[in-house]
Length: 134
Image (cartoon, rainbow, N blue to C red; front, side, top):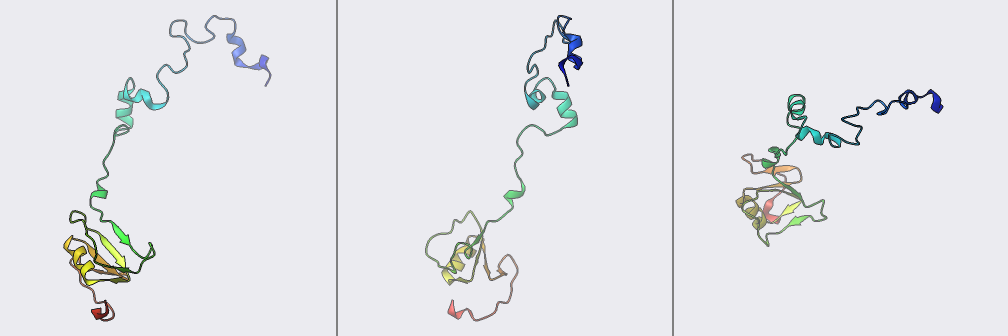
């Protein structure tokens, strides 16, 4: 479109070119973006967008238990050397787990998972094979 056909051509003569003389045409008078919602547009944001500002703690993550999959890390057997933090129960997945490792994990409130079978957490499962080789 050529310049002479634009609407702005009509506003070139008057002093303020369509913007008020007093308030003037400033770049970001209310602040950039949604920053005005914390201050002079508070009522609008509280009415139509409640909870827009502020942090919300993820309550669902408080109930989750971390799952340690040893197979993904490239190991098959978990041994009982070392300590398990007593304040943090966890689920350990592995093909083989030694008796001392299983005891320590369960004492901390965790659970042990052998190839898709979950032991502990109030449920007992039968698992295939004899535990004497572990």
